[in-house]
Image (cartoon, rainbow, N blue to C red):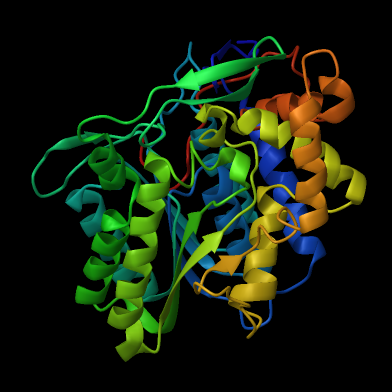
Length: 397
């Protein structure tokens, strides 16, 4: 079949297998260019490994530190008449590249919140690796079924206390408009914390500790975002912000639990980027468009792979993680430079539909979005027939 992008709101319902493979290969090339990560991890578990920061983490570990990796994700395989999800194609491409490089790579497709997947992954670690020395937690899901109670929680992206009104970018039409978002009600905050907070991260680490599959000196990282004040009502001070506060509490609890292993838990605050998760957050696409324009002009723009390469290379395994006053690693530091934020803030007040191309990089936003699904990459013939039924080698069909 010939695969073209079919966009519905903030998601693309198709993905291109060769395009996704090219995107993975480009990320690998970025990491290889930096050379070997000295003292890097050797056996890595990535929970949420198929897209965005999780995929880039797996690539950085494998191709930067020559690490064996186990990846966990929940993706849909392709069929003869329907494409797989981008994350499936990404994972297939990653495993093929890892195999060609002589690197161990094994993947598990299923509900990462479930006890079943935790057990299967732990058994694989025991059998294949013995122990892991790095655990990346990068799940992004709108809902979660609790493994003990079977209760289904659903997250919401809402402000707390009052209606939030601000500028927004319609990513379908390119129109800068105004959006009003009703505040959280009832148990919205609790539901969002249950999905996007730290409970499952802690459950994973508790299970790994109990199974004795964590190596001495193990490090674990989960990802967060803070951003500028213009996004705070919908992010930092909204329902998702409460979930991230919970994540930081869990980080402190995990520090104590890992102390006997001389281990460390981190929350890494990352840059605002176009990911499948960020595309769904109101206000954020306009901010990202303005930010891209400023940081590209400054020469400091990074995508997920540059961010994760810098996290592994310059922070986690450099001996100098440079935590902030709250103990978080900040690889959003270039985004949050005062001069960058001042210019973005000035343009925010002035931007409208007519001057968006002058003040923002909407074309770059759109291109980044399409690349998530394997479209718009150089060297890929999008007019050619392609087979959508691509296997992930380590997952039985």
